[in-house]
Image 1 (cartoon, rainbow, N blue to C red):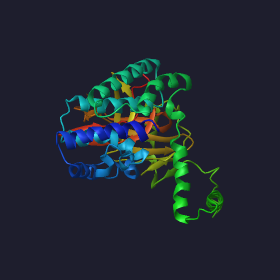
Image 2 (cartoon, one colour):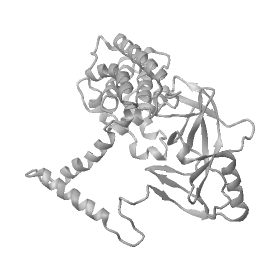
Image 3 (cartoon, rainbow, N blue to C red):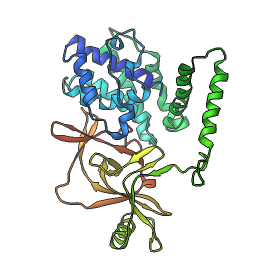
Image 4 (cartoon, rainbow, N blue to C red):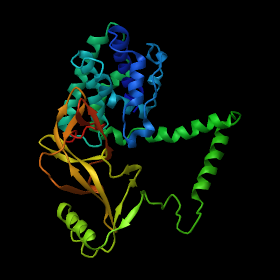
Length: 368
């Protein structure tokens, strides 16, 4: 987290923006901020929408992480190719350097990674640093966090995927205490003040308002939106599709099946929408994507998604995204259980020059 999201990304993106804004004057800072403000990030990214970049953030001596938090920087880096492609030349070495660091990040933050990918990662890091030095070596130096990139492949071999041992969630927990310190403005005995506030907060959270309410220890990590109980033919169709496409076995004893308007599982919100996509496996070296058409909850079996299958055309290297299209012939639906998703996060589409693209922050082919 600290290497990429609070170090290397901001450092290299700052140099790239200065090149486009100050050196070749491809666009202005106001143009960039307008695009950042108007860009469609998708409902699942609304909390992490990037902040506007100030002039002081682009100064070489600035250490403001471009005015972004770690989550904002992660989102900004993934959509930046779409934002800058409207203004800049995508065939330059500077552009290739940007795509290179984004690729490294997507591999290093993958939840699963193969030995072949680790070998590729080691070579890609070397090539990236050589490219960076040739482009910006006269104006700046290799910083320590860029040097740390060299050690990441060996650390993955020792400890497994780095995302399983990063400190992102600890930083999020720590943010509560930092915010409280600003609110109470009592620095005489700050640890005591913060611990009391936190204990009061926990006490309030553990109070059971009603018999149906459970303490956080036993609270389910699943919350449903509007739900409709399916009966008769509707229920039979769901049973047929789930038994056909999944390996859950016979559902002849099921008595309750609900069609839900939305469901939140472990913090991820799923809802049927024209811009809600899920990655369900891969084919011919490209990930498969499906638009969420229906969500079913089957009691004692879990949540199932009915996906409208899209055709993945190709991977666009200049945009770091997969181009998807509607199938020429109707392909019906793909049904998959939420627990079986390799990548259990909602993806959103972005239109660029009349084509539809999907960005995945975590490289879906890292474990192949």
